[in-house]
Image (cartoon, rainbow, N blue to C red):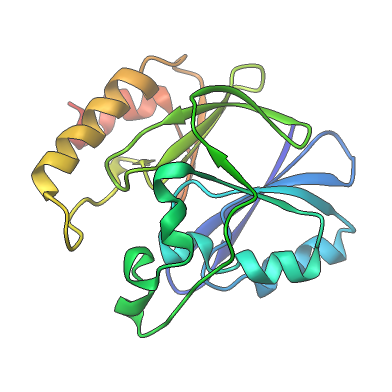
Length: 213
């Protein structure tokens, strides 16, 4: 598995391009606020994105959906069913907070179950980790020892839960519980690729993440 990372937009979102060896088909994980560099990169490298997996529905992760669809019309978009309404409702994806009105057409496939899932030829174990959002997910490959965590888990931090309409304390308890019970039980040498910031490992987070002690 080959993994490339682009840091996109004012919120410095990590958008990941996952490939098998040197094949042109690829999987995209999250888009960032500014998807133009992502589209340019894909075209420059002559890559064909078969699937776009959204780890959750906040604007800084979904804003590029329509641009990717326009440039790669065969791409299939995935999101957890609990975050699906955020794609078409700016107040729910928080784009209105930024003075924007980001709406996308519905996802092609709604994720409803955890476990092994085929994303147009790319297989990952979907792990549902609500807290940051109700439909937050992580993608795990045991074979490749990689875990994409979106805004669930960062290097030495975790996702925010202090959003309008949330019970921040309850959401944080839910998030921490999911991280401890579903992510920290993975092999310690698993490489963690978060939605913002540098990569880390499960071992590093077990030892040094202040939210998880």
